[in-house]
Structure formats: structure tokens, C-alpha cells
Image (cartoon, rainbow, N blue to C red):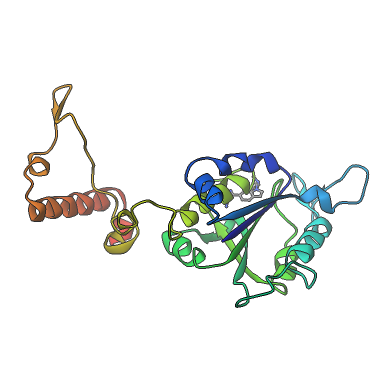
Length: 239
Ligand code: JD8
């Protein structure tokens, strides 16, 4: 898979070379490129923002630099693999007004060959950019959650981790993927509580059933715990 990011803060993506994603890059499962939006500006100030039409606080990201960037990344001049089937690409606009990013988006996007994350700042990107981008490639506007961040980079990093860990060969034991919250049989349930040694810690004991070796009872207990926790904290998932 190829991951690309367009941002005015390229250093935000330095952590991408750490841990799981970093190893996936080292092993060649993943290639990554971070693009500085200002490389597609032409004025001495390399400006990327301007005042909003209709007034209001803050600044809006200009369509010009984004349009040129997306033309270079997706347009007819964009690098295309010469051999093999056509690449499945998607442009992900991270935005507080996007569709909620969920595990099912992660699972679906993990099947793509190329993902490009457009990371906005200020009050957001001129809305015509998404319209233009849809003439070049598939576009998904996705939100990390119902809270306001100052830009799209953190959301792009979080979505990256959720997607890359699903790529074959990235996670050591793929079995652990099926047991997770929001995926496999735990599609609609939160995680059950987990424990490790020592069995007694500061006067707190591990639930007996987990020390019993009785796999069926352990699986039943874990299911009950996951359902109880979900009922208490995320009844919306059960509905
Ligand atoms: C992209 C600019 C900042 C947002 C004025 C603060 C995602 N779950 C999420 N929360 N916030 C974002 C997000 C915020 C962004 C941009 C994503 C580009 N901002 C703006 C509107 C209010 N400022 C996000 N994914």
C-alpha cells in the first residue's frame, strides 16, 4: 500500500516511522510520502490561506495550491504503475463535518492500493477543492470524532494506524484482529477486561474463571463482560 499526506506541517508525520507503521515501511509492505502544500504556491509568502467569502472569523485555505497539488498527485501526469491492474486510489479529506470514521471504513480502506490524506488547517479548505477532486479520484470526507481539532493531521495519523494494522503481514498474530472491539464477532461490543501476572496485585485478585483453564467458561465470561461494558458505556452499539 502507498500512503501520501498533503499538509502545511510535514513534520507532524515524523512519528509515522515509529512502531507498527514504521516496521511496515521497513519491510516494504508500505511506502509513504509526505507533501508540503506550500510546494504548490507561487508567491514569495508561499501563502495558502485567505479571508472567508461571506465574512466570519479565521482564514480559509485557498483552492489554488490544493488544486495544483491534487492535479499532480491524481491528474493525467500523476505517476501510474506500468504493470498490473489499475490502482485503487482514494483521497481522504479529514474534516469535522465528514462521515464518522469507523472500523468498517478502516477494513475497507485497507483493501486500497493508494490512500492520499488531505490535511486542512485554519477554518478548513475551500469547498470547491473536494468537488474538483471528485473529478480525479474517489473522495471520502471522514471525521475522527465529535470534537474539534485544529487541523486534519492528527486525524490522518489515527486513521493511518487503524488501516495499516489491518494489512496482511503487519500484525504478528492476525488472530488477535478478529477478537477486537468493533471487528469480527465483537463487531458491536467493547473490549472485555484483560489481566496478566501477578494473580494477586496490591490486594486485587484476577477473576477466578481466568485461572481455571476452562476455555468455554472463560469465553462465556469474556462475552458477558463485553456485553455488560457495552450496555453501560455504549448502548448505541447494542441498538
Ligand atoms: C480538519 C481545519 C480546524 C475545524 C474551525 C478549528 C477530523 N474529528 C475532527 N475534529 N476536527 C477535525 C478537523 C479540524 C480541522 C481540519 C479536521 C481543518 N480544522 C477547524 C472547524 C472549526 N477549526 C476532525 N477529521
